[in-house]
Image (cartoon, rainbow, N blue to C red; front, side, top):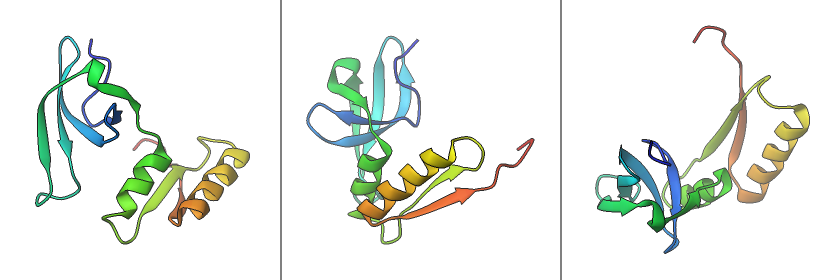
Length: 108
């Protein structure tokens, strides 16, 4: 099984943040770099050793702010503690992005 999955956002060793669009065995990927069809670049031969780790939400938000005028990060109510929600709000405030708590919807 591949270490990363389709649609994971990862941090590459060269500092770029990319989204995996295809995951193959063993540990081979195709990834998109960029934020719109006009700026996308495709990495056709990405392997596990090129990837440092999954990108953190604050890295994704910081990168998104460069290209998206209104970034909103959200969590789902009841899936994290109130303390964790407060920490998320603090991080969003520091990054200058909006934080929203979405309601939990049973069965969706």
